[in-house]
Length: 123
Image (tube, rainbow, N blue to C red):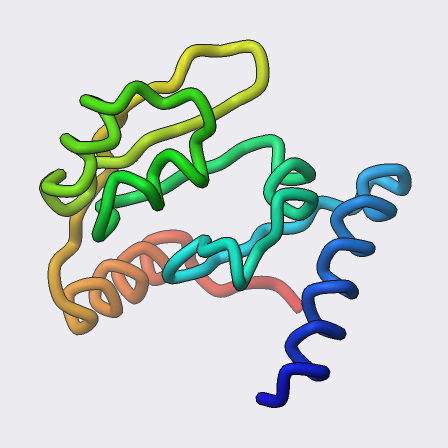
């Protein structure tokens, strides 16, 4: 992707985040790394709820969860699979444990089993 295309995508995401909230549009951004080059301060500020799983360095944790204590950020670098951090306005930074399903095949099987137990979906 060219620099101009990347800049345009970031601008559109920022606008969607800022204007969408006014109209009740909720946006879920899923990124492998929430780096400053990918998401600027404005875009991160528009994301009121932030969830992160193990990160490769404490600075990345502090970037996504401003105000995170250094020891929390350092511990998050070596967190086990399924251990995450949750930032919600008005609440302290929270560490949580999510189910870890292992491989993609395990994940797909859990989805199939869950779907089968609910019966067919009406059209």
